Image (cartoon, rainbow, N blue to C red):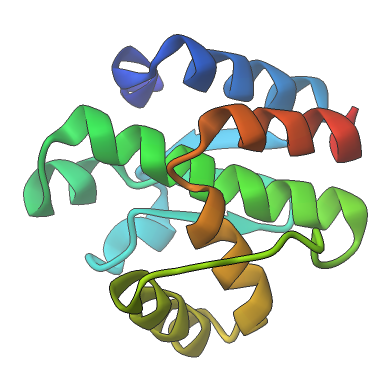
Length: 135
C-alpha cells in the first residue's frame, strides 16, 4: 500500500492522478531508498517516494511528502517534454545549494534540478506543467 498518499493535499492527490494517467508507476520505499539521503526519485517510468527516509529524517512529514512529490513530478513533466521546461528560476542560496548537490549526486542537469526546486512549493504550477506535457 502507498501510505504516502495519506499525507497528500488535494492538489497532491490530483498530481498523483495525472501521473497515473500518464502511465508512470508510483512506488514507495523501493530498493533505491536504501540511500538514506533520498526522499524521492524518478527513474525512467518509476516515480518513487521514500516515505521511511522522510519520516526518519525530517518533519513535518506531510509537508515534505508533498514537496517531494511536487519536485519529482516536475522531473516527470520534464521527461514528458523531453527536456527543460524553460521556466525562470529565482532560487535563494539554500535551494540553489540543494539543486547543485542534487545534480552532483544524481548526475542530473543542473537547470532541470533548479526548475524542480523552483516549483516544489508551487503545486498548482506543477499540476499545470504535468497536464501540459504529459496528458
